[in-house]
Length: 302
Image (cartoon, rainbow, N blue to C red; front, side, top):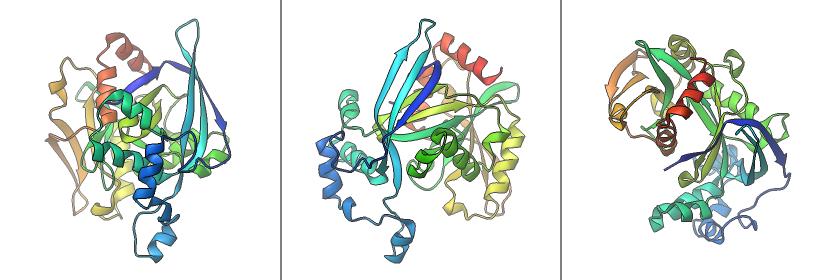
């Protein structure tokens, strides 16, 4: 299960190592290199245009990864985090997931040893519904985890192009917010990254920003406008889900409110049982701790 490995981050610093972390880089586990070659990922198209010219949909684009993440504790209990970042091909992460699937690896230590720590960024969006504190989560569309719920309202890879920006994390997050829920990061009140999620069972790790609580209808309207011209089968975000923040037992997540567009572009509200992505399970586990939940709610502006 994914875990919040670092919370109460006071400062995030990054070092851009401006050379490719290739599939055979010394910082990657040899088994990842072996799987990458066995699957033929070294021959995969490197761009969307190249993939289309070969009649393919998947390509091996440039994203990024963290070869090293270091944490330094402050006297007040907060943490300073320094992350090294390198441009990395997307299918390096896929090769690791292939190993987990083929070998049935579930042991945490082995997963951590193999993971290339593909770099992700996420936005946690709190709101209120029927007087209860909720997170506006994402119902995954096409791609990894389709049909399941992931706790961030927007999340994704940090593309390599953002490593040249002043702040690669916020630049990547701005793109994800616009593409996935149709809202600009500048329209939300956010601060520095609040926590670091180790989601290495998907070969990914993520720094999460937390927005101040926002009107649920504002997010729904922004999302509605963003999907009105896209085929439902092509949506990366198939809908929104409302996850309770305050709960006393895990059964609270057995059935949750789902808001999703229909074929005629109306929005349907329903209570459904859906699978939960590892990230979601990790955040649920983190918020079981009353003190951590209290601090989280304060960050959310409650």
